[in-house]
Length: 412
Image 1 (cartoon, rainbow, N blue to C red):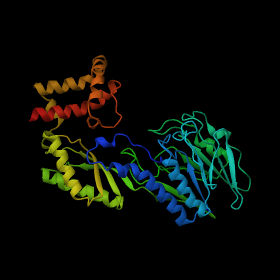
Image 2 (cartoon, rainbow, N blue to C red):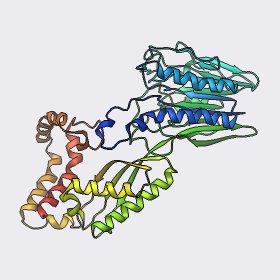
Image 3 (cartoon, rainbow, N blue to C red):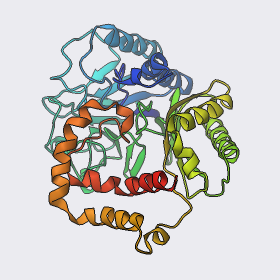
Image 4 (cartoon, helix red, strand yellow):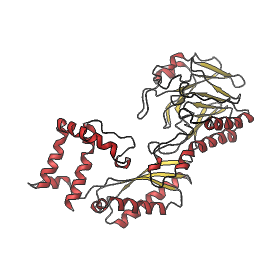
């Protein structure tokens, strides 16, 4: 028996805000989810699998028009012609309450009910597939308790969209524990919701395959699905499907003594990332780090530095690269401890900045002053797209960067 386990496809995810990135291949990025899904269907046909599992979030929310549903139906027709059935559950992004438009699907597509857990049997393979779709976006109960007991003499698969006991960056939906899953007695748990591939447990096998296409810089690395083969033993193989790959490239400039060495190191690091991406379009964030004598020169004219590095990196890419962002996090070679020595204005200033960690009342006043400013600044001023100034911890997290900025400016 051979099947594919995929999840979190997010067809036609709008990916709002891409236009603000200069030179961003907006249409390529927005079309990547469809291209990756076509690759998934191609793989199903090439491997001649027995069935396909989709563990939730096929869609990214309600369709703006019928084209999303028609595209999915067309791809499912390709699998129908090859006699490959598809079993899917709805997750938080495509819950029954969120998808208001519908198109008829080919008879090979089986969508699990959101009202109760149910089971589909494949008698020819002696396989029982159990699952339940989300009725609402926010499902906070443990759905595992609703799933039926395993069918004796069958290979039992649980199809579940869940955060398990919690994962960073993901809402806590349909929470459960590994013990809950193991005790159910199934042979394989096909999970969805977490966008990073993670093998949770072996025998029974519990797996998040990750999403099939990264959508932004927080979803870096190789994305795809899991090909599962069962004979005397069970084997799982990750298969890449992404057409565009997001990646972080950290370049340590500790040994760089001038800008030419900076450009050379960036060039080398970018080439290595492009090679790993294997001919895919690479969306890359470059982060410059380390204590270096060129720290001041890099920070004197940020715009000049960023565009020079962008030009060097793009020149070495042969068309396979888009620079999403360049962040300069270098430090001067001068030791902060040395600068703090003596009765100097700079020493007093840095000592005061250090003391701000203990002055919560003062920082709370500053937070209130900064909140209106946040809405007026362009997104590139902030480390992450949705970063907010909510409390004093935000400012405390910036203090080291503030120190370095002040040192750099004063030493000029």
